[in-house]
Length: 339
Ligand code: NCD
Ligand code: ZN
Image (cartoon, rainbow, N blue to C red; front, side):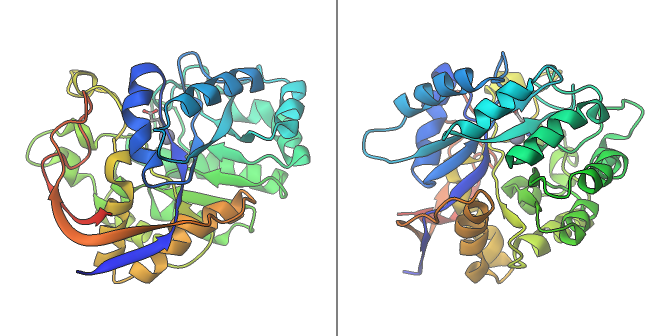
């Protein structure tokens, strides 16, 4: 039987929520990944080091006894974030980044930043303290077509941010367009990007053709096929600026299958299996380890993981539900399985 072994990977963009949902989803991630960058968009958002440490403890409690996993905490940047909090974050061994959500851009982003240009003093502090800035790169202007919001964010804000803060390490999270890929490729080495499995697997037809399919709805929204192809090329390029971030974002099924359904795809149940399928189809399985296990760790200046995981070529059917969460590709087959 064909197997593939690689250094234990890290998930550089993950939503694990809290309470019962956290307990339901965390084992899926801990089974495959050694560490994950934990998104702070709880209700209320995680805006202080003190809150992040409480949240970290809750996550540690949810790790199954037989698995080791390290949550890498982030803080939610708001226009009320203080310079003192940024200093505290820099001094904490558990805080790895600040996350910038334009207000209203996505799930639980109401507390985000209304005018990105108004927080340059905070970005200057992040640059000075050498704390990475993670960016949800979409404009929130309702006049802007939803399929153009990422490109518009780059043109309107990101080009200027990169120019103003040449030493600020930043990650353009869950890139979805060829324009984002080109931007990251041509920016200096401080700028990186994460890529999700859903944006590598699907274009917008998966969500909108033959009936509206809410489990494919996430933000930034799935784009045209040309963009998907650009993302696959970036992921398999071996360019260390592009690394794995699932953006696994669990929502209860009834909140997705809804007249106003939530944005987010649940992929943590089989993240590495999904990526393995994508890389194999692109004839680039040899590039998966860099993308999944090395480049993210290098960006965050963490030691690369010591252990390994092994995937086996084996067909299995994704369950219809995990607790009350419908996974991406529910009921469909995957051809790799972690053993
Ligand atoms: C995420 C969520 O549900 O928290 N949803 C999503 O569609 N990706 C938020 C985010 O990362 O945008
Ligand atoms: Zn996310």
